[in-house]
Length: 399
Image (cartoon, rainbow, N blue to C red; front, top):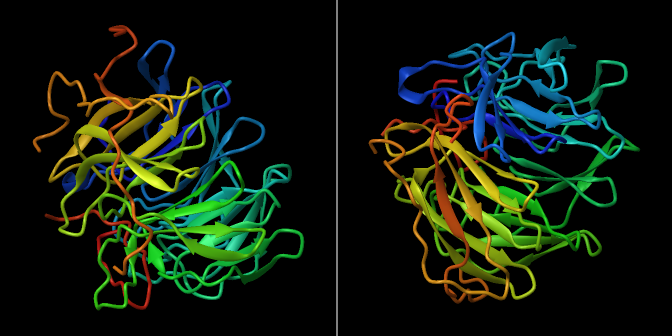
């Protein structure tokens, strides 16, 4: 990539390319308006038009039109944004969208079945003042309208669109379901561990896999957890999933074409960033080691490419911010390969209660490092998302 960045967004476009937007470079304190486009067919990064405003901790949502809505975020300490912009890949141009009713950094957004966008939570002023409010953007009218508020203030939470059209929220307090038709929230069963900075992935059978994050274990403190839970919309209930091989927060989870889920990197309970990756198979309820990244990563992104590979982009390592990216190539579900290692010409930087047993099988898949390819060449202070406002989590950072 052209810029080292973390807390950026990466959006898989309808063209198969991946748009990376904004973010920051960590200790240097710079926030970015710049955007880059990855073309998997050419294996190139291209600088594209920049946003009108520098942003990190923003949201980016692919609209049904193929355009990308970017909303909120922060320009720096105290500079929380209510503004929004829309990127048109066909024209390589940004245009102003209507502003939200309230500034939000570290909010979460999801595309609804009818093409509107639901955004909820986030902080207002940079002082850790998370909010319970939500609003909905209609791209046809370019207007935001108020949505019902969640039961508790939210930050570091997830929103997952279910096959029914409802949205599952997992974060502070018990999980909730949003019904866009009635504009109401209702409780979505009882989760064992409230958590933040986790992941939530809708499986091919419609269930939702929630992994890691900062969890309330009931043992004091709120460490990163290796626990997983699975939501069944048909029963409106939760079940325990197999335990991951490592504790993780600020990691990524990507649904693969064969129905498995790739979890990569993140921060472990010691505060160190992880190089490990693992695969969850919902058929067997087992986690399998999936090789190592070329360096530890957190606050990165992971995007499914049209050919089934996964692009892992930028993020933070131990004291460094990365411009590097890597590609994960899944092995067939039935094939087990020896422990792989990422090929790299240089490093990317200077760098609970018992659940269902999770036997560790042979590692699967392969990770390869991408160089910072330009088109014409063709070939610690923890930056926390820090809007987790659980009763039991109080993390601080300069937003």
